[in-house]
Length: 78
Image (cartoon, rainbow, N blue to C red; front, side, top):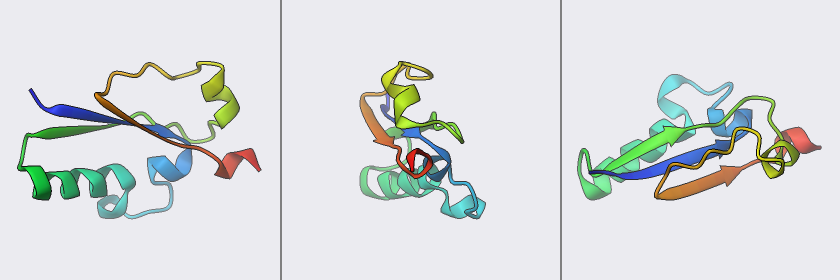
């Protein structure tokens, strides 16, 4: 069973404005595959465009299922 890495955050974590091959989840998966081999890890991108740190603190959309959880909010909080 692969180690799961779950990403939470706003549109920057989602990869808004980036080409498909350069979205954060895709880049992370490629790096982990290169380091640990195909199938050893699974990256799940649970980011939601427009979400804020406040919404996360209120528990909105924060059902963590990953062995490792990465959070990235801030751009929409300005």
